[in-house]
Amino acid sequence: MAMYLMFILPALILSIYAQYKVKSTFNRFSQVRSAKGYSGAVAASTILRRNGVNNVDVEAIGGSLTDHYDPVSHRLRLSESVYGSNSIAAVGVAAHEVGHAIQHQQQYGPLELRHRLVPVTNFASSASFPILILGFVLKSTDLILVGILLFTAVVLFHLVTLPVEINASRRAVVQLADCGLVTNEEVPMVKSVLSAAALTYLAATLSAIANLLYYAMIFMGNDE
Image (cartoon, rainbow, N blue to C red; front, side, top):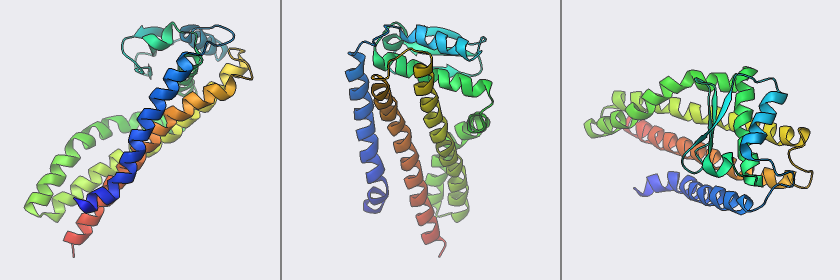
């Protein structure tokens, strides 16, 4: 347990901080009305049209921070606190999700790779841990190796997701400024919101890597 904590504790602390940071930053800038007064839904629709993305519908969805782009149905779903709000946080989050729609239209390489990894990752994330546990219990290096290889796919998915999210945020800032949806003075505020969100993806990636290194260390110890 002590060895595991040594590997995972830094990533766990970062993850807790990231969750706090994203919620506190979103709540803070949810109280700041954008100067232009555009809602998240209007901002999203404007950026989509400006980039010639005409096959994506913008719709509201329940929950908080549940915003996402669905590449299968070509729908951009914005949470209630984003869809109708004209806050800095709302237009920033909406523009980020539009960034994914633009990535999809332009067949952005990392996003295309992430889409291909989804079915593999879904299987690997559910199967790797049970196989690892079984391998540890039976002291089977073969099963442990299979579990590690499966978990490697999960780590790869996180590594691919990170640049996808960072790129979407960069696109969001540029599009908001170019479309005149925010002022130059508001750009740093938008960046603060999106940087906080990116921190959660970084924490998830580091946590996955830490777990993989721990499993690999156990495997090498059992293989001696």
